[in-house]
Length: 189
Image (cartoon, rainbow, N blue to C red):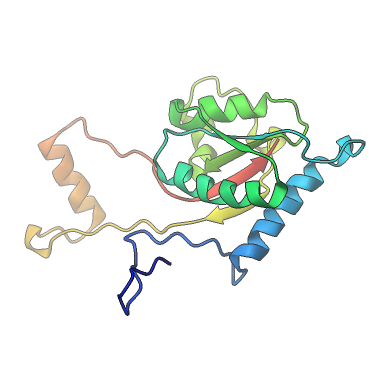
């Protein structure tokens, strides 16, 4: 929380991202994430982990919710682990391009995929999806979530989502919905 000098009330940004999972404080969460990264490197125990920078692949454009949360967590990881954390934004195909790059990385614990729940629908909407989510990747930690809500003016007269969709199709017969959220998961490759 940022407090402006002289203000009695702290400044509360519009989006106040806090790193907590069911009551776990930020330092404990960072330690937990760091422990997961260290555990992924157990096969390379001959050298101290991490001995080089860790790459975090974000399969979306910079500045979006997944990128923002990943940068916050990575900043803490960098301080805890003592190694640079390099964020690599690889946008395209609803997250599939970056996810594929992370999935094809050497499984040595030095590549982390920060993804959203959008990847769960990708196999059904991306032709020739390049990997099997249930066999090739496993989630390590959920670091954030967000509820999506739909708000419309009562003056419009729409009482249901179907009413809104019907009106959207009248206005633009080619309109459709796209996925988007702030649910973020880390997958260690």
